[in-house]
Image 1 (cartoon, helix red, strand yellow):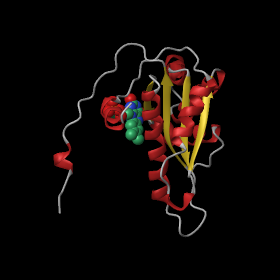
Image 2 (cartoon, rainbow, N blue to C red; image 1 turned 60 degrees about the vertical axis):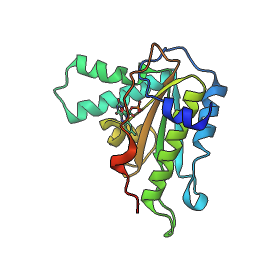
Image 3 (cartoon, helix red, strand yellow; image 1 turned 180 degrees about the horizontal axis):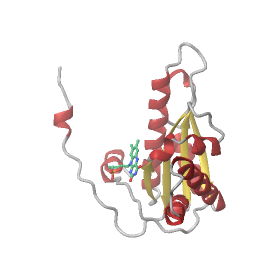
Image 4 (cartoon, rainbow, N blue to C red; image 1 turned 90 degrees about the horizontal axis):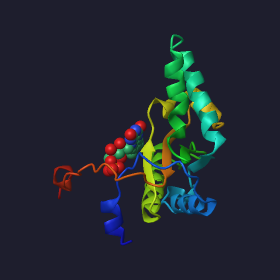
Length: 184
Ligand SMILES: Cc1cc2nc3c(=O)[nH]c(=O)nc-3n(C[C@H](O)[C@H](O)[C@H](O)COP(=O)(O)O)c2cc1C
């Protein structure tokens, strides 16, 4: 697919089939993410691939966290939370390394990891897959970070849900760039 076409025709696809994806396909997505630009070549992204029952374990961590925050949460609310990661056969969670040297800037690491996320979305599109970048409160949740072995101060910037599209994507019309542009 031509790059401009890929960028323009990519849309978030939330509804996907639950069929497992071949590992090689997931590895292509990770490789695409790993091609992102990054300052000082630190590759500050970490990809966590969740398939099968790992998604249920993430759901358990999310439900446990909800119960901590809202002790009156109903069993239905907890079940609904537990089911969130089961919406796609594959989730790629993306975290960002903290700078380890003075010359490395935290926001630049976040930028690089975000570029990796967009690469993954575009690669998924190229492969005919549906993908959506999600965060929600869960990306900032200490218990969820702990599930991934991440310290609470580290940034978890994405849960990229991926699968075979189930139906047509909802097209979010994108306004032209003009009102975001200043020519100097
Ligand atoms: C940092 C970030 C966080 C996002 N979090 C969510 C989310 O929690 N839930 C969701 O439905 N979409 C989320 N999205 C996806 C946006 O909703 C989606 O990209 C937007 O609606 C535009 O649609 P498009 O991707 O089809 O252009 C997120 C996107 C970004 C970049």
